[in-house]
Length: 422
Ligand code: HEM
Image (cartoon, rainbow, N blue to C red):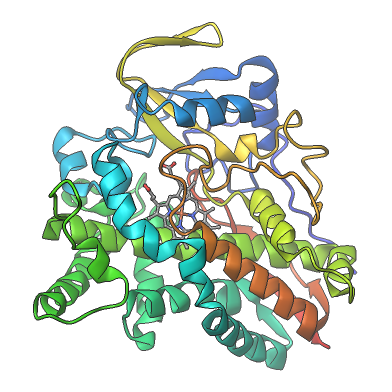
């Protein structure tokens, strides 16, 4: 059996601002060097934008993510510069600080709480079984295309209350938004094509126009008194008397379609990849007495680290690790680097399905913007693991995998597998 390892890049000096930085696997050697030698590292941007500070140690990421009066989300969360006009036009509640963020988060948070998403367990299992039926019938398939790419949006469509038949279209548009650096998913590749015309749209992507049209029909239905899944929640008045405008709703809809689409997918593709290349892991979850499903899901999300970073902006000057950060400087929290920090995890480059404690950072833990879809993603991954353990006898990778072109989202985008049913 040929093995196709995760193969992180061994180059210790990767340009982290480049969309090509992750093409051949994550730049873990660069992060290891930074954690060791320069934990608050100044990194230039390869385009004309201003450089940024890179934070790579687990303890620093956690500490700085909590200091929200010092590090704001309200000046953009990606490393690229944005003008005030672009920021205003494109912002969602993810690009706001307290108290505005707190108020909206309280509205939508309830719909995605652990208790609320638990009600979807049966629906998730039904989708997973249907997708696995198809994969097991084919025996040989691209597991990302057939399974990992489908589940998150099929479930999110049901939660949002939009027709199942629209899920495939939403996947396509969500990919065009968030995978805007990968020519497999968009013709408007952010660092190759002039996207100035689209600068006021989420992700500078024309796909947002189509999603805005779709959101407009949802707004019209809600205005006519219809209840549509969880979406009505966000249009309620917050306690502070603020109501999401139609512009903000359209951006929020795009955010859900983007954020709920690919991150769970790449956790799943890392899971399939791990099980196919390490039969001991599959054997471990197939053991009749294996019960640590939640720990296993957490560990695989740590391992996958689908969102490599999020950016903040300094609200005033401060010192960190003997470096002076000026007001307005961009500070990038590399959650992925924190997930491989040897001072926070024993043997961080090994998958330990029963790792406990596991203070992983993939969801932006510690900060107020901690992932809204965290409980949903964990549940989906747990159910996929359980169904794979029940229904699959063996899994083998049959050809090399490929990675998404992006320095923001990290993941395996194609994974040829042979899957043998139980
Ligand atoms: C394994 C899967 C996922 C990962 C690794 C992930 C990662 C993250 C991270 C790191 C953040 C924090 C951003 C920051 O600190 O600025 C975040 C926020 C967010 N995520 Fe996720 N996410 C996942 C799944 C989902 C899903 C399924 C949804 C949709 C239901 C979702 C919706 C959101 C939203 C709306 C926010 C913004 C929350 C806020 O600003 O308060 N995510 N996610």
